[in-house]
Image 1 (tube, one colour):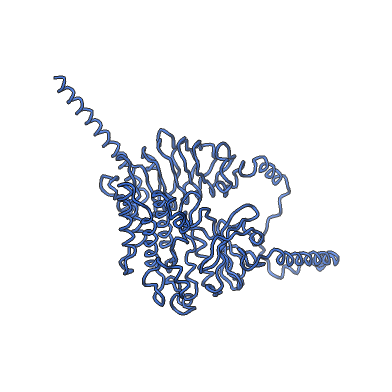
Image 2: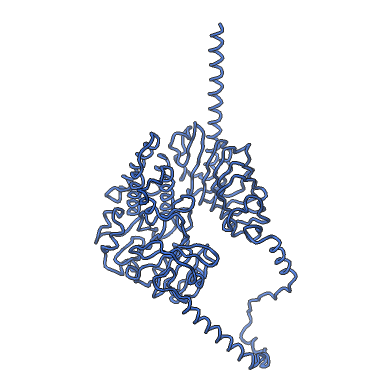
Length: 569
């Protein structure tokens, strides 16, 4: 009888546990479907979210642990709506929703609602409201480029190691553990103060001074006719004395002389990072004109950049290739940038098409695309100024100790980053569609967190004897068709077969081929050390083989590559 009671009791508890597990699983399912209904009502991005098992491995972007949803990666997935339902996933550890159009406010996040959340990536959306996040175990919080407002006192994050709240509408004092982060984590919030930004007392003093100073007369756009000007007397027009005019002329002469001396004194040699001398500043997106060809064009994030700062920057050679030399430049304010000086042999053209394409590339902003901050297209120099990536290129990592320092987790992180970046480039709203044209390990750069960024997008489209399908004929046929031997050597092993010497144009399909070759190199360079790792590697090899199909039409699009990678990893 006792044995019977024992079996009945065991069956009872097993039944309760099973039903409890199903209930928790159903709660995850409800949260996921609620999120899908909010952000993808047309079922175009989350079409794989079907059925009753989000842990089947078929749901794009969803990863599970012990039957519960643990990670969601949906960067750049064209999602529009509210992310709130996902915070109902009590076992969620990683949530990455960067580069979408999500809106609304965030709920109050605490250990009671999200006890396991470690990494929260919500940058480049349209989220607003105040921040109330009290998660002692949260390690990463990236919320830059949103519309959050209010103060930072609602953030209780004692363990956070990766933080960025730049480009919002936050206000008040930075205090506590957040002050350990650099100013770049808070830039773009004019009402924020305190270390590492200027002290609040200084800001308050300046504000008070501004408020007590006389208000300048408002600027009025005149609609008067030229006849109204006749009302000004001759005396008013001659009110500036001859002596004042002489003083002004002398001052202008002195300034012009100092400017000429400055150019000669601080101009760098032609092989230095910033070889363009005395170029004028020009903030980007103005209508293209002939005279702007010799100016420094500045894009988002490079507003504080000045040519004189580039000229005086200390330069360190990072690498040299067929496209030119790359330098690490440290500006006066300590900001580090990478300056690409294009080869005059490979890039002799001084065309409007180049300027137009750079204006387009300057708009690309994605966490896995290295941002172009400025460029100049002078007759003597072509300079490209990018964000500096401290961990060098994938090529150098693979060559260093034969890549033994790269574990499987790091390799997966790099490959997923490259896939997201290339998919962003291919789907960027441009007509004709954008082509990178030179996907290879040396153009894949690694930041301080081990994330990959694609550099030099579309640059090779303007190289001598190289053509891209995405450029109009007048831009890509300036030179004889086909790639010269030197340029071809930089592609060795990565270029698609249709781009062999004397054939074809670079296309999105050839980009996919190059990505496949990079994927195979990264995957096959790592020894298989366990079953799970081995299964993931074999899945990635299959994707690489599909990407490197000989016929371009048989290669998958990068969006499909991303979906398949999400299933295997």
